[in-house]
Length: 359
Image (cartoon, rainbow, N blue to C red; front, top):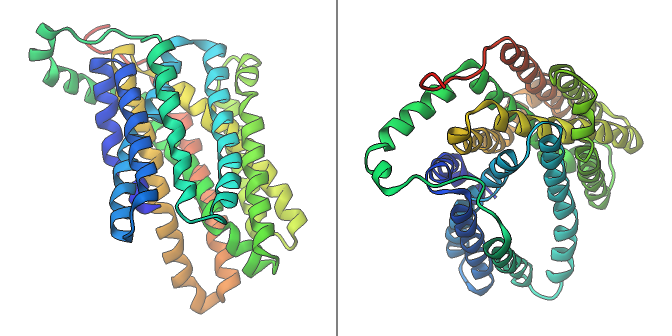
């Protein structure tokens, strides 16, 4: 998992820059073909080190997919429609995270190699993109390409350093911190703290994915009911904190399930709206770069969170005991992650619109 997530932190900003410069379609096509080829190749190797190398390469392909898809939705839609589109994309992600692990669980009973063949689905999807996806932006022409790279990077930095941009990038990462806190310690809470089975932990994770997938479909409808997105986002952030804290402090699986539903609903709407805001705040010429940096923030949080929580539990356990340490660190993660997100939201709401070169 680390081999897969690590390269995205550094590669995502590069793919965003390339998508702004050469168009969304070629970057998505490369990502699909590379992701599918390196993923399915794992089924044909016999050494773990080779599998790790392929997973690292597959992470590069992933970096060319999700951020550019999010950016393309921002190019194609605006306002409530754009928020709805981001929510539906997030719903598709939730469905995939429910269906494909189940399929992999069946296939792994036949042979360890077979689940990796599921990545071959990227190839027919690439064909669909090649034939029917309409490029929403125009690539830079050759004459401009020779002189404008440094200028574009300078302007992108001006966008990212603007308070309206960096605050939403940080807030985007804070949402992932809460979700990864749950994913990492879900099984420990269910099995070691509540004394239930690993199957119950899997069921709780499925409930979380289903909750955020369903909630994400309502992102556009929720946006339409409010003049500003600030207050819905603050509410859903608080829901994430309350939900995750409930999971870690629960005395029974039933209470943990309620917490998971509340957290999942908050996460589904929050991440959909964050991604919608990121596509809105940047001028179209720099949208891919900013969205990619935002997604890189999420991947960085995904990489750091399990390590930070594990270290904190290791320090606290000798004094508090293992179970109290897990509960305390989990609740603290929820509060810190959401507090960072809410503070960033208020800072962003008071910032002026982003302007580049007087535009």
